[in-house]
Amino acid sequence: YFHQYCWSSFGCAYDDISAAQALNFITSDMQGTQALPGGNALIAQAIVEKIKNGSIAFVGKSFCVDIRETDKGVYIAFHDQNSRLSAVTAKKCIVTAPKMVSKYLIDDLSKQQRRAMNDMRYHAYLVGNVLLKKNLKLGHYDLYSLLGEIPSSEYRDSKDRSFSDITFANWANENQAEHQALTLYMPLPYDMA
Image (tube, rainbow, N blue to C red; front, side):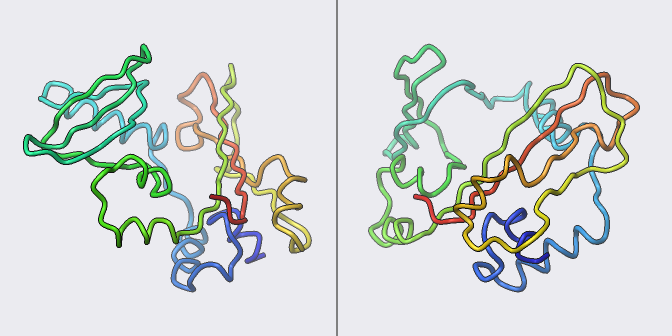
């Protein structure tokens, strides 16, 4: 059970994580699941409402290509939604990309930081959403499919599965929604990039 649980929750085998990491997840799962109506989208909506009349601007459908500090602030270059190269200067920039991507975006990383980023191991975790026209009324939050024998090869076994878990977005407010969104998860628990 623990092998498949770690595969599903962490995208790796149990011998790739610490006991504290495993206990953190499994104790929260065994004590029940708490969710906001509408899931984490409620948090995002609250953030948007809080800042939409402020001086913060969000640029969607864009792809960042360069981040560097200058004497005027942080220079951020990106391809905008029309595939034009644009740039802005900001006081601060919060980079939320994985380190395997960030090391190519941020120009002025120290040699030590870049070396540490190069030494990191990565596993992929695929996530897909399915939107349904009607709401499914279900009595649970998650369907877990990693049962059976412990895989002898994570690489081969991951190719035999379509997903490891399915979660239901309307679980917390199933009687209020007209539609349903399913999220399918598929960890690839082997070294990638």
